[in-house]
Structures are given as C-alpha cells and as structure tokens.
Length: 266
Image 1 (cartoon, helix red, strand yellow):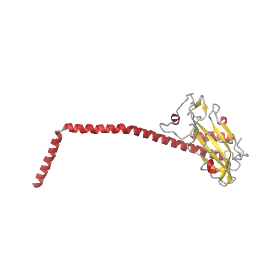
Image 2: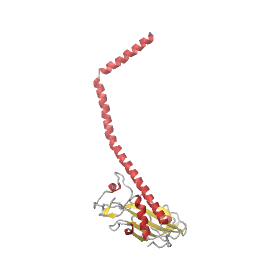
Image 3: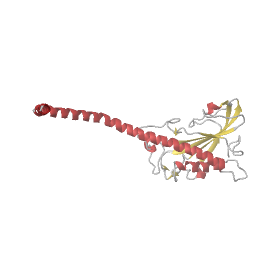
Image 4: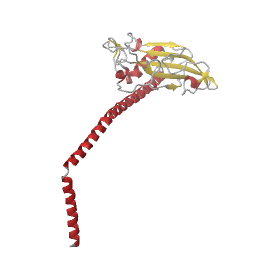
C-alpha cells in the first residue's frame, strides 16, 4: 500500500506539472520562436562560410591536379628525350626531337589539338610552354648553365608539332624559376640541383602560359584566369606578371651518352 501511495503521489505531481505547463501556452510559443530565430541566424552566418570553404576545397583539389599533371609532363618529357633517338646512328637530340617530345608529353593536359592554334586562338585560352636547361658541373659544388631551349605554341603558326616555336639561348628568361648562371653554386641555379665535376645535367621546367590578351578558338579575349583554369576563388602562384604558372614541376636528370653536349641542339 505504501508503494502504491508513493506512486500515486508522484503521478499527481507529474499531472500538476503538465497542468501548470498547459496553462502557459504563450511561454511555449515564445520559446519555440526564440529557438527558431537562433537557428535561422546561425544558418545565415554559417552557410556563406560553408559555401566559400567548398569553393576553396574545389580549387585546391584542382590546383593539386595541375601540379600532378605538369609533374607527369616533365617526367614524360625526360623519358621521351632519353629514348627518342636511340635507334639512330646519330643520337644527338635535335630541336625537332624536342618539338615532337613536347607535343607528346603535353597530351596529358592538352588532349587532341587543344594545345595548338585553331581558328582564332587556343581552345583552353592558356597554352603549354617548356624550358630545358643543360648544366655542367665545374667542381666544389658549382655549375654552369651551357644553354637552354624554349618551346611554346603562342602564335598562329603553331598548328602541328613541326610548327611549334623552339629556340635556344644562353641567357635568363623572365618566365622561368631557374637562374642562368656561370660557375655558381649549383643550388643557386635550382635548389634541387646536385652535380659532380664535369657532369652534364638536364633540367626540364614545364608550365602553363596565360595572358588576358589570349583568345579562344572563337576569338574571345579577356577570359579571366580563374575561368580558364576552372577555378572559383584560389589563384595559383605565377612567375613574372601573371603570365607563367609553373605549378612547382621540375625534373632534373642525367642524360644518356651522346644525347646532349655543350652545344645547344639545332
């Protein structure tokens, strides 16, 4: 009986709470409205931040992919140059070898004819460019740049591998992260360069070339870089006046015997 009475007492107390709560519906409505208002305020603040974060994540993934693609291009270029002339009597690499290797290696990013000039410009607006440096060790951790080649497609003539612009020089280029030096510390040419005395090394630097004056196939100009690269908010690092985007891809290798010499390819 005692247990039953205690249970009845608790039951009556619970009913009392419910009755008291039911008598103040305005308080209940007010609490609900206050909660809903707080949720709306938090939603209004958080949603823009979330959207911005999503765009940045998208851009970072896209930029990371460009890094991977240009690095693969450099590796492919090195592999092609190491093997393209092996069945010839004269194994020396020529400018035409570089043109064909360039066109093949860049298919990873510029499939089909997208790297070439078609109608009024380039399909993707931006286009590929590549530096190749030949460096010789001079001893005591030093080295000298012997020559460099520059290959690109930024002209209306570039419609096939043989018509690509490919030229050699013995000087710096504003669109390169590699320093052209003579008898200087190897690391001042490039931080990753390690070279022995009288050893030849080849440095390959691929990058994307872009300018607001570039046109697409339909002749449209002033395509923003972010739109051309498929980005929303982020902007990749560039070299010299927003023109050259290397994406950190450098390949350094020791060439096979007979491929390169102290004289630039011709």
